[in-house]
Image (cartoon, rainbow, N blue to C red):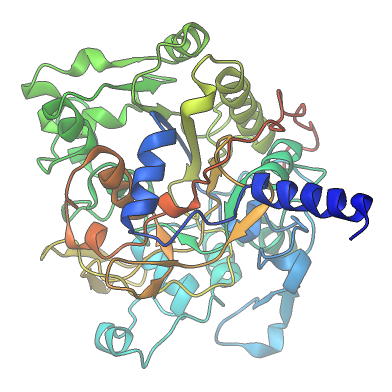
Length: 456
């Protein structure tokens, strides 16, 4: 062989060896767990509010994301019972946020997913009734058409943001790992979903009731905060405003004397700069509406992008960056359209929740299915660049969608604790998505957010 050819082969082999693999190994394997432990010492979660994947990442052109720009457009009828009113199709947005907050209650999700407030639970459980995702526009019109043009209302829930309109998220998608099949754990509103991220159940709560108030702290189940404290791991809950502190959902935070671990957001930036972030950082945005940074309507997408950029830039400049996994996620879809039907899921416990639908009928939910798809990304020098992850695998070897409970499933491997609930136990983990080669090409800063029209 010619010496130059040999050198070329050697160089190629070296390049292949150095390139980070998309998947380090099989999920739930001892190899993937050890690799996670070797490289990740700090986990940071930023959980924003009320955006579906098709809404917020609908204009991302990267291969592997199923969304309107790649696979659409998608449509909804204006009226579920009157086809003569026609259909409307998804298109790019030309506005930052909306003034008419979509329905994201349990029964609101029902009509958006199944076309009725009161779907047949037995038919859902047996697989005979599956979501069609056709009721989003209908429900938005039912709520607001007396005062708002129906075309504007349809745009609010069906349209999507382009890559140029969300430059911060676009940069993250292009540089890190995005999940194509990540669902909220509860087809309902904010606080029950936030409880799932931290404890693997909402303990029978299906709406934002008084149990979540900081002066009630009505959740008694085990949380990640309790687990870490009792096993000598460090944590802080960084908050933007005192009216949204998720650690205060849990009675244990108060009875154990750990309320001092909830600290202002300014402390996060100081800790990141000093390299003193705890092992687990949970960041709460401000919520909800104009002037807040969670992306919850009527809050601006651009304000949420500024928040994401600030958190990322602080982490990237931190001495702890090379051992950090930053998880960016959302609580739920917020009534925004997503075309992927939510799957069934294991019940976390034997509790149920009953709600009165807008038509006056009662609906009882058994917490046996997920909510819609939400944007979720893994951000770290230990994840591959521009990867789109599809479905995952649970510990029984079943292919399943990822969900909020996947976070607890994975953190259990990192910090050696058992799943809190059957929902967590049956969830896909993602420790295998941590590679064994540290990247040197991660962006030092993210782009500036785009300012554009405020409302539809």
